[in-house]
Length: 215
Image (cartoon, rainbow, N blue to C red; front, side, top):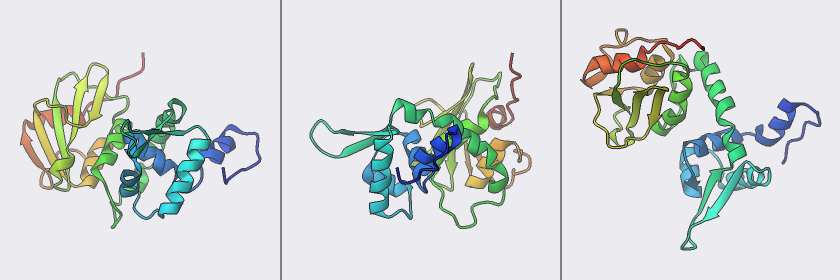
């Protein structure tokens, strides 16, 4: 790896591996799912192609990323190793920590709906609802990138639509969806800025679900 702090400290050793610019964002993309090189580039606007290749090579050498070749000998797919996937927990912690940095909105920065697949589980962590509902979320009018959110006995599950019927569909800007998910905004606060198709109580069951006290 290019960075070496030379300190026998867990944080320093971790940053030796993932502390270089773009590394954690590459991990973010692969936490969403395995991806081909061109798909990674699409989710990392601004990274030079040679730099992405270097970062992937470093992460592979460190045991964070692995690559597989399609059965037909075609494109290479990159994925996290089991050890690399353990970065989900600290990354979700950083997402929750970032809330004060997100309240000012995108300010021209790029947003991709697929990032909700990582952000929403982090923001919904520890919450549960007694209602059984499934809702769809479409951000910035992009119906093709709908995110599915549903209540389960274990908490709130976030993923891509799996064919279930939606009790409601929320259409809103990214900043509003994130604000609702953090609890900084309520549905009543943004009633005029969102579109809800279906049962609005289903949205309340998701966004107003209380924290569950640890047993």
